Length: 354
Image (cartoon, rainbow, N blue to C red):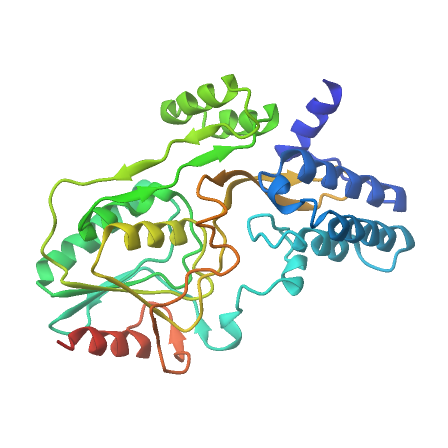
């Protein structure tokens, strides 16, 4: 009980900052590894009989590097986390990025600061640049205004630009899904790794949310290692909107997490959607709903996914991301803020073809 309480305190972000010794670094590394192995939802699927030797070698080499001081703690632990190739299992300081393929740093290629915006591109095409799925009342109202403006424009086609959208909450994008719905589609559902810490974390963070608490009650009562948190279901809406006739979704390698889930659902329920881009999406969805870990001696922080998709491994996307249906044959634009950039104009012309 004492150990569980101590881990829980670390998990919720209470850390002790003190003079850090070599022994402290080793203690934090061992503690961080314990958190990954006991709590991370993807651990059992990542560390298998085939990968165990590689994992153990990586863990041992990192511990040795920390012990002999040949690497900084941040760099060493980032290397350890990178072994799992999961962008939701990620250190806050960004040390692990150098060991993983992505995300692309677009700021080195152009002025890259996507801003929510909506406007007519021309008589046939309307742009909505949707840069975050983080839920808030303000965001919900903005989406309503954007869709209202699209309907009033009487444009035939919609360009939904989600470049730079790193995710947030899955339900934030439901109004877009309802507008573009053509037919029923399948939602895979989510399971949670059944530990008191994982369930307790969501009980605290979702306190007052009766929907979450109901699902957590059922998961907690289960004896399964991965009980169902949110059930698979059919996505269904009444009625089909005649407009837009065609839908272009523009993505980049910074499109991630809930934005990827949003796009996958769109592809399952709409025949009007075509995905455009130059790079695949990040691939940051299979393991999700991350909590924040703060190690006690160093204050080092990393995120730790507690749930995973029920569609794994058949429908996993982390290894590949979502690949564009149409590759945009242009260089990267000079600027991506709230402007109508070169890519949007090219996509608008493509949509306007009969």
